[in-house]
Structure formats: C-alpha cells, structure tokens
Length: 149
Image 1 (tube, rainbow, N blue to C red):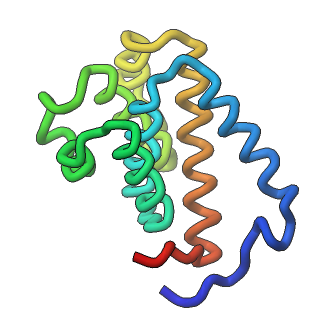
Image 2: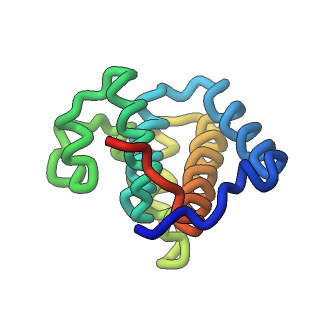
Image 3: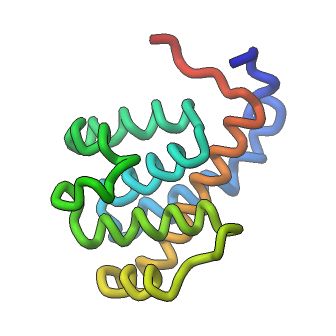
C-alpha cells in the first residue's frame, strides 16, 4: 500500500465527532461485545480494510473471542457450530447491508435477525454495520497506515 494520503482527524478533528457519537451509541446498548466485534470484522473482510481488520481482531481477542473463530469468520457458514444462531443472523445481516446494492436485505434474513434481537437492538446493529462501513471507506480511501508489526 502506498503512503497515507491524509489523516482525516489531523485535517479536521470535528469530522470524527459524529462517527464517535455513533460508536458511543452502539457500545452503550445491550448488544454483546462479541456481536459487535464479529460484525465489524466481517464487514471489514468484505470491504478489504486491513487497518480495521487489524484493530478489530485485536479488540476481539482482548475481549475473549477465540482466535480459531476469527480465523474461520470469513467462512462462517462452513462452521455453523462455532457461531450461535444469533451470531449467524448478525453475520448474514452484516453481509447483506454491506453489499446492499446486490439485492438489499432479504425478508428471510430480516426475520432471522428478529428472532434473536428486539427492535432496539436491530437499530443498534444497523448503526454498527453502517458505522464500520464508513470507517472502512475512510481508511481505504486515505490509505490509512497500519501500525508497525
């Protein structure tokens, strides 16, 4: 990857304020941290955002997500016993919202999510998926540099 094009925060710290408010909202709710980690990592895999993958995988491990689950997350359908019904519903929702132009969110996925989450939680899930997609786009567009190994 080439050199970072710019730092959004350095150029305009206020540009982050809205995103940080969304993050605060997401984390203030009753969604399990594991759910938030899984959806952020899955969206970042789809979008190809190395910066976000590195950050969110580290956070997930710190919060106790088993490395083997992270290793197979991109192929979660092949390891259904490793992910709860609620986690699988969120992963499907994350994929469909992240790739919204490929047919939207199906009624089947919407119903599956509704069996595991109440409407307030669904709002937080949608906000979390939307936020990680924005973060991915900012990091990729600006060539945000990864921390050194």
